[in-house]
Image 1: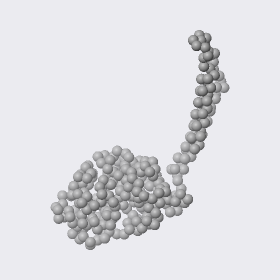
Image 2: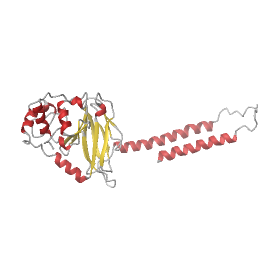
Image 3: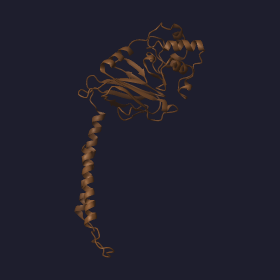
Length: 294
């Protein structure tokens, strides 16, 4: 409002002077050959149009700097959530260090009460190249730069699903590096956290678990309670609690999950997920095992 009022006042003054000059000094006689009065300098005018703009620019600069500082150094009230966001080619990793929860691609955050704000603070890291975290309805985009931690925060006042994506070209599948942010009431968020903190259910599909643990899957993925401790791919401990797979590129259904395991390029050409070359029996077993991870 301060900037708006300032620039509006400048507009009114300049426009008024322009109208005054047009009306006051217009030629009243057509084809008047006489030369208008010549002014060869005015110290007062020169000082005025130098000093006044400087003062205006300084005032606007101080107002902008104050707002920028308040955004970048926002206070962390009790109840606020910390999330470490890591951008990968081409998916998102979310770690809640205080809550001991790790998930991928679908971020859950609590609703913030305007009367008592509890923002979610995000530390932004990159595992490979430049990415950019952007959810248009929750705030401006912020870049993820290798070896240069960045930070931002969101303060959602409305529950629901908010969509976004990587806004910095990062490679072949940049366009399908999508974001889904679920803003939930504090009760629903706490319930989700409790569910995510549980270890994976083992023994529900022993054949599929055996195939999973005996292939290269364990080199890239983590499933708590098993030998899988990979960090290159998403944590799969609760994969079936997500609505999508492949960073939002496909719905998380049996058919799409099976296709993703069999031939990732069919869903996301150029992704880092390799085709595992499983026979149909092992493919069905692994897919059935994935469906037990809720």
